[in-house]
Length: 329
Ligand code: UFG
Image (cartoon, rainbow, N blue to C red):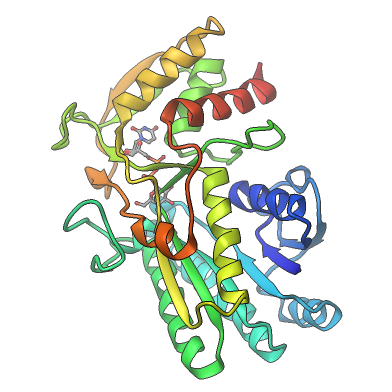
């Protein structure tokens, strides 16, 4: 199949491209390289361009006939979305409309969308299933939820079949060591702790120890990047095969919660094997961080036939540490 991966130079997109190419698909990457890296596109053809460029999109869809589109290109910093909502609504929402409209014009009817746990807002219960109310508390989550709603209307009006995958905490790295996480600035817990261990950062700050959890630190559901990508491949297969139609949405996580302190403990154990250690400091809670975010991914498992392979936190951290060592030590 010929698949367009928008945002294929980013962390999740680049792992997806590798997986698709290894499964024999023909992949074209569209990325504006604003946060992604040319070097992360290990296979497939890279088109450098922006979703705001309607002419570029029109030309691309005229030249290529895609069987499906996967869309990973977005701004995803919750804090920045609070101070610069315009950027988030324009890029995550407005530019996605450009992409959807060109798909409709060219009769490309299969779309996989990166959504997020942030569409749920403050959890009313845990684990969070697909029936949980969606009430985002920041523009990032709202921009993603808006696209989810658009996709429902595009399914009924234009017959666009889509799957929104709501990620909890994507992490880890390609088990073969070819790719890994690279954000600038980095805001995610696991790469930050590993940078503190490799010496690229002086210490890791724990954002709050007074949460209503066993050890007082926040609990998250960490899902390995390859498991996340495997779910995307299955989701595309589900709608392309015609087994399901319409606008679908599934939560993606392991259903296991680990606290910030537990993650730090596992990292400390793993990096000690390389004679590395890290400094831990306590800081203020980060605004808008819920105490616990854990997914109920029963639906993804049942409907997509998805079975996460790397559910063990130590394995996830070993893969991420191998990548951190490769780029820093
Ligand atoms: N944390 C620290 N110190 C740090 C960084 C993070 O203690 O230096 C804590 C956070 O407070 C949080 C946990 O580590 O409790 C995980 O934080 P991340 O920033 O790695 O991930 P988030 O859970 O905040 O974010 C994820 C996705 C977002 C999404 C959000 C939904 O990365 O895209 O879940 O709430 F919006």
